[in-house]
Length: 125
Image (tube, rainbow, N blue to C red; front, side, top):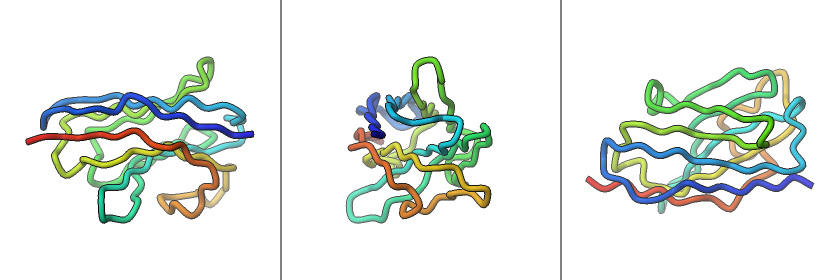
């Protein structure tokens, strides 16, 4: 059974940094792709960064150059390092996972069957 538990969210001033963690259990990394999504109040959930089963990464245009997704297989943990945070990035951040697909799961939330409960990020100006 796949379980995802996010942590590391909090309040930070604009320009600051946070590192989010997603502790994963029951996820066979060799066959699963994982990603970070966020959802602000009143907005749709959107993809932030993806890491597929082969280590390829993808980033939303809005975060390129400021955000890094990585994983520690020994700790079964996915990370999201976010730098130069902006107030408009205030949202609930979610970790997601699903079986690898050769055509890519992409930034489509409906393609992911496993989700954590989220960790809140608040960026103040």
